[in-house]
Image (cartoon, rainbow, N blue to C red; front, side, top):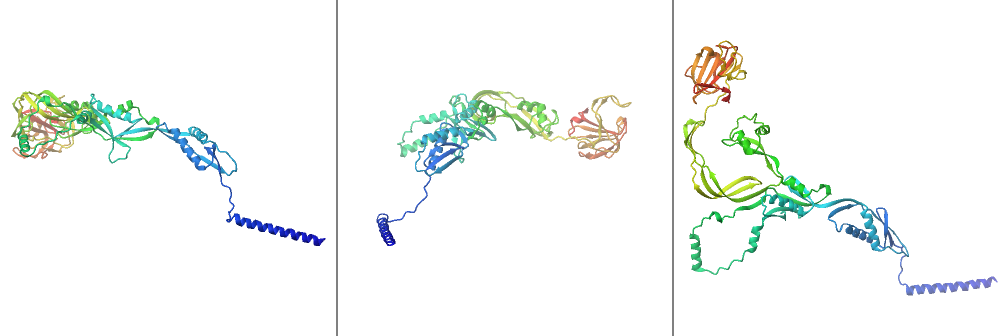
Length: 529
């Protein structure tokens, strides 16, 4: 029995061995290379946008592509710059069977989520910069309207137009503005081509000689093309494309008000010969008290001003200024310039009219330069005098007149020039000088250089000094305690001449000082420097 079983298993084992060998043979015959087994790859992707499932796709790259398309379509018809919160997650898995969503379905879902997650929207606009001033407008058409309004204020005919050009040497999106004369451009377009010149040799030489010998013909008044000759912006204008919130963008009417309306700006006025503070106020259209308030050098409306002195004034100027040159014809009554005959033996304060003036009449064509409404230059290019003007002829001195200074340092003014109550018996009720109370022995100096004409006792003056000056004036110094000069002595301005005191008709130590012109006392304070 056991022998039979053993024999049977041996037969089965042999059969298995033959079958295994057959399998190996067939594998070697039909599968010559060995393929390594691999894990299955992700082929099904679920897309989440800002935490919300928007669909499924077969590739992760497809999700990125559909998101880009959704964003483009969302802002395709808008000139605004849109900021959106975007957080996309893609989860992949390997499936044997599965169906992904249609691409249009996924993209529409993405658009819906993006629309509800818009964070900020900025509008394309244009920043207009003029020096340090800047205004933002919503379109390039509004920029041109703003600039054209500045030009049209001076050119209502519309001949001069604003053109926007790319600024040289700047970024490509930076523009600048230029004022173009459209009439000249149109005339250039209409010009015919010049005819060819077939002349040569002697004939051409003779034409050249005759052309050179032909005198220039003077233009008549009707030959001039009157009106604006050219226009430009005074300041550099820069226009740049920017994206801004709606609240940061101005409307054209507001921009025109800010850019073109006159603003008060400080300027410098230089005093010229003949100027007074009242005349400067009229010239500049600024009240005198306002001029005083703006200038520390002016203590009051009666402060003396000098030639060459610079004063701060305010002038109306817009943020954007327009310069232009106009060719103007006018007829006017005019005055000839004053002619001076100089006398070296006279002071500059001495003058004499030798000939009275007479106005003339003339016709004029002039090139007048303007900055906005203000004339800044004028050049006469044609003039026809109908009646010659007769100039005023004035004889004038050349010697600078002497000056007068206070004869003591310090002191307290106790009595001015003019009517007063008599301070003591014997004193005058009309004071002919000015008094300064000062300690006895204070140094007294010559108010102006000259020659001592009196030095001694002078009745009510007490001890007194008289000095005659080159301009014919005389100064007197009274109530002195000591005199240090003598009659006939030449003294210079500021030289010590005496010591103050309390002599003569006096109520206390002080100095009495007078200035006489043509023998008559005047208010000394009006002449002292």
